[in-house]
Amino acid sequence: MRFSVVTPLWQDRPAAENMDVAVTADRLGYPELWIGEMATYDAFAFATAAGTRTEQIALSIGPLAVGVRTPMTMAMGIASVADLTGRQAGLALGASSTVVVEQWHGRPRARTARQLDETAQIVRGLLAGEKVNFSGETASCRGYRLRLDAVNSPLTIAAFGPAAVRVAARRGDRMLLNMVTPHSLGRLRAGLAAAAAEAGRPVPRLAVWLTCAVDPAPAAIRQLLQAIVGYLAAPGYAEMISEAGFAELVAFARTRPHPRDLLAAMPPELVAAIGLVGDEAAIAGRLEEYRAAGADEICLVPATAGDPGGARTLEAMSSRLSA
Image (tube, rainbow, N blue to C red; front, top):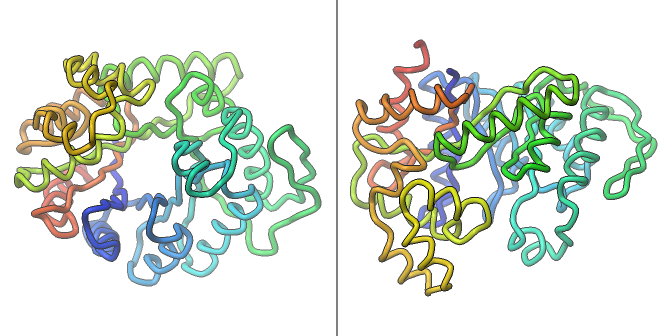
């Protein structure tokens, strides 16, 4: 099983700490750094800066919301990062949330599976160096060809719902899941395999972003719980968390309490149900569950409260790089 690192973008920590995570991951020999985008750095700008501060680590940008950036700007961005840093650079596509797409960016978030599918087709052609002429229902590109070198890296599709899983099976080299239980992972893996068979394609590799904290301080547990607050009543995630044994908490979340009150009701055990949290023996056992459920890659999202830059956690987990 392959391991990589995700810049965590914790909202309770300084944004610059993400560069510390990147430098530590590179120093410890992790092969890939995932760079998402939320409320702080532009992902392409951060990836370029990280490339100048590190030595060997590959840079995967995203998942980027297909409702926000055009296929051309994403392809140009990835090619720019690869050219300016000399690193392998990859792209992950996703739908993101209604808050990010509609409220922050003022863009419509509708027909996301169709937009994922069409954007993936355009981006794949552009990154191969082709002049693309594609007119879809939700995405299009006519007459543009990269002037930078083609980018030879996997295209990743972030998925959770059935329609997005089918897109990943048809168009992706990898499917990315964020914060799932082993049971949910196994179900999604089965859906991916069935959709890939129907499409006549090999099953894409399955990568999973999981929060991680080795021997966490109380501040780290609180940090991880805060990151889950917004998921407790979200479609799909609510059902998954209920199945994991937290049905009463989900029912409370569905009453729309103040986030402060919801956080106060969340038990510490929740973070270990959908992440890698505890001592090294507990994490090793949990990793086996994810491996058995079908994970090909584990992408570590390190807690940093009480562990600046996630250094202690990344150091402990780096022993698995040669396993």
